[in-house]
Image (cartoon, rainbow, N blue to C red; front, side, top):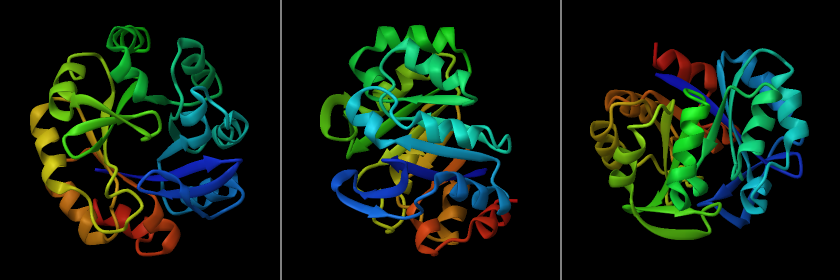
Length: 237
């Protein structure tokens, strides 16, 4: 299982939102390149970036910082936030991003998502963010009527790289992940599932690995120091 550190960007700074609420923001490192270098030093192979301004704007906003991190040449990068058209996807891939994460547009226009999954085979990740059993969209600001498991099964038939499942109620709360629902999702599909939201301790890491997740995305706990990235990586070896 991979440990994937997360950088969430607003105005070029590394931040975290509590339960996805933009008015509950915690500021961390002001230089995302410096933060990425720290993750590299601790052994990271992948980096998860969310362009939070992009998620609200419906198009990538923090491309300058993403490009600078990609230029380091040390990390495989996955990026989400505001990817609603083919040009935005291509823009990120052109600056060195390995995989793009599509959430809102996948739910609102599954035909388009299917086309992008085919066109960029193996380079698209489905971001499934949920409160309870229903998928959330628009940077977590809206709720859909889509069932999490039903939608995941439909999407898993496409040539996508993985599904990232985030329980919004857990995200940024440092209270442990939703293991039960993550396990349900892992058992429901035949593609890699990444666990995100609430991973706080090494014990959480071991539990996520134990249910068969392909990766754990870790954010606030790294910044707050409840997990050391190098220790988390060792725990999965």
